[in-house]
Amino acid sequence: MEKSLENGDQPKRVTLEDALALTKFGTFNYLAIVIAGMIITAVMLETLSISFVIAVAECDLNLITEQKGILGAVALVGIIVSSHLWGFLADTQGRRKVIIPTMLAGFGVSFMSSFTTDFATITACRFLTGFLVCGGSATIYAYLGEFHSDKDRSRAIMAASFVFGIGCVLLPGLAWVVLDHSWEFTIPMLNIVYRPWRLFLVICGLPGLIGAFALLRFPETPKFVLNQGNPKRALETIQWMHRMNVGTKEPALQIELILEGEAIQKSDDSNEDPKKLKALLKLIWNQTAPLFMPPYLSKTLLVCFLQFGSYVTAHGMYFFFPGVLDKLIRSQDSGVELTTLCQVVYSSQITNTTLELQTECTQSLTEATYGYSFILDVIYMLGFAVMGVIVNAVGRLTILVFVFTTCGVCGVLTIFIEVPLASMWLYMVMLLCSFSVSVVSAVTVDLFPTHLRAMALGISTMCGRIGGVFGTNLNGLLLDSHCELTFGIASVILLLCSVLSFFIPNVNRKLSEPRPSVGSR
Image 1 (spheres, one colour):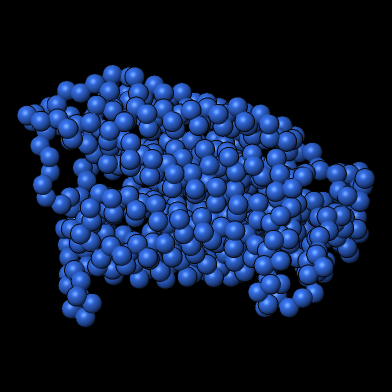
Image 2 (cartoon, rainbow, N blue to C red):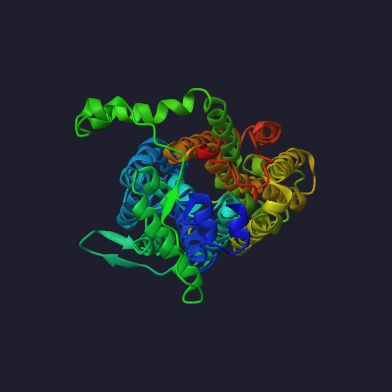
């Protein structure tokens, strides 16, 4: 087989891995990467945009501090609640059938949330938004990964993360362009005053809408349809990918049959009516239980904890970043001399200084706050680009250990450095632990078979979101009164993740080496 491929001859019967390699890497792959990146970006914008909204919409929604914390976490709660459902449906009904409708519906709810006038309504809308966009966030990695061979899979996922990095840059940029204005107009029928923050919510949902429409032109993954017992459709998808990549430069692939040894494990309940609740619950259980049994139990627990640890800081600490940064900048502009970053956080307790507490609702943030947020997201974008280039050369373990260790150490240093500006930069580096999320997702795609892959991604993502909710609420409780402890907990978790990365099975397997198929054993 390998000799034939090297000589340019096309065997009639090939494994799916070889078929994907024969399609070449071209237009189709680049489009799939861009679309996947847009959907990942949409999820990020939907969950993190609220951190800017609550800073400028407190008067319109009559928000108090506790309610701001709830709004910051409620979308993640929606994601946590729905992760298992979407993973199950993606593994049984198809990746594409989950991603498209959930992203379209998610945009619809985001549009509706822009017209809310009270805390309860916008909270319900944000929960539904998180519930729906989760269908894309966990499933898109499996969808993208299954269009690529082992050699290109991690690189493709890192490339999609680079597109996501571009999207990260959009967040503070959009916030500055849209929110830094004072225009308003009244909508009498709805009895609301439409201000920039409402438009901001709609704009942040557009990438998901565009990505969903783009996927209407794309097929289901050949891996999934092949495992569903439809080799003819899988072959048609492979031929379509090849035509998109090479055009008319080469003749069509002369493949007659795609071989695949990985079979779907069907239970005795598979012939029961899935509309019956009992049969449906049994099917869900049979789809989930293998992940928590040997040989997958240790893998499941490991990737779940790594995602949990990543999100504790990546989301939990990021949610308060604009507010802490804005407070730092305002205190320095006022001439207040503080030492560590935590003393800046404690500045709300300082009296008789030139730093005055605001008694009016904040309608905008300082331009420097947007600027530093923009710099942080540019670093995200460039970091994902570098990771995509070097991942095959240095390996995923090296990247994970470097990211977790560097971010954890910077978190510790943030507590002790007595130069506020340096502490702020250390805080920013600490937030770069989100690089690990994509790497762990790429590892998860390789660790689990096709019929469990989306479920594994969904559950690991759910654990990550739980970490985000945990981090957000922990910081909300401790940041103002025990700032050092807040940074210390996040740092210790990151350093523990660095150690646990060494226990990922086959993480150092050369990505250019094909995995042996069942048929070759």
